[in-house]
Image: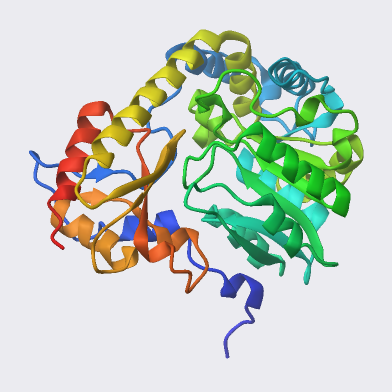
Amino acid sequence: MSMPLNPALAATFAPPVMEARRWLEGVTFPPDRPLINVSQAAPVDPPPEPLRRAIAEAALHRPEAHLYGPVLGNPDLREALAESFSEAYGGRIEAAEVAITQGCNQAFCAAMATLAGPGDQVILPTPWYFNHKMWLDMGGVEALPLPCGDDLLPDPDRAAAMIGPRTRAIVLVTPNNPSGAEYPAALVARFHEIAAQAGIALVLDETYRDFDSRSGPPHGLLAAPGWQGTVIQLYSFSKAYRLTGHRVGAVVAGTARLAQIEKFLDTVSISTSQLGQIGALWGLRNLGPWLAGEREEILARRAASAEALGALDGWRVKSVGAYFAWIEHPLAESSAELARRMVREIGVLALPGTMFTPEGDPVGPRHLRIAFANVDAAGIGQLAERLGELGR
């Protein structure tokens, strides 16, 4: 007799990145033609050495670095991020409106836990970030797909028509994962207006905001009076300072919302890693010029990806930005089969569009997500050459 299994957990899909890694089992790649891995949107290099030294010094000399901290995060980091966001968005965010989480995925889970329960609905533009869909599935929350147009931008009026009595939130990811699309400020403002009128939340996941190609604030919501009544903004230190293994993210929301988030965090992680928070604070205070250089390199790789992939016969770059390109392929098979074949035949690991769309959605089989941030310009050129080798 088997033990019971939560049906909501069983119903969601396996972690896509882990599934894709299993495609590598039993496949060898010659030294002169190594694997090109464009499957995951995470830095593969360690943090810069001065930040690593700051973490090491804290580990050696600060006893509190090994203890529980405040559930909503260390006060100095909350204050520093509030000041950074106030400057970046032209508003006034208080430290009490910032919570530090174990990465941005936990920030999303915590926010959703305060908004929606079994039987409720949340609107997700598609292609969606798969972990968002997985978490909603696990909580018995219905994800309402909002298909994006050919420009990979969601239609706010279409979203407004989808809102019903069980709808609790609209989620936007900008710059987007998986498409890289940067949502115009006016578009974000229109979504905010719709959410506020409906009395639901607008959740903005800005994990990749440090690599936005635009100058100035990407939106004006945090400068608007009363933003706390509608907006929940998420952020990740992982991409900015290469702290993925330390798991440091953040939620920016009203204090009443954070009081509920505190309950969630206390039962899941108690507190975020002290060493991760110490590293994030050091980065905020000291790595501004370094991060600006990282952004310029990512923007250069974005341009190289748009040029090299856009020149492929029959392929079409639909959107490119931050860490990602969303490309339409010209081949007969579904991207689910194509992605597996690419590992064996051309030594490229990429995620199929089917991992970012609802089952049966015709968009998924026609597209691939290319995470180019860890591939230099020469590697991007090699990637394009290999894709061009695929037979039709």
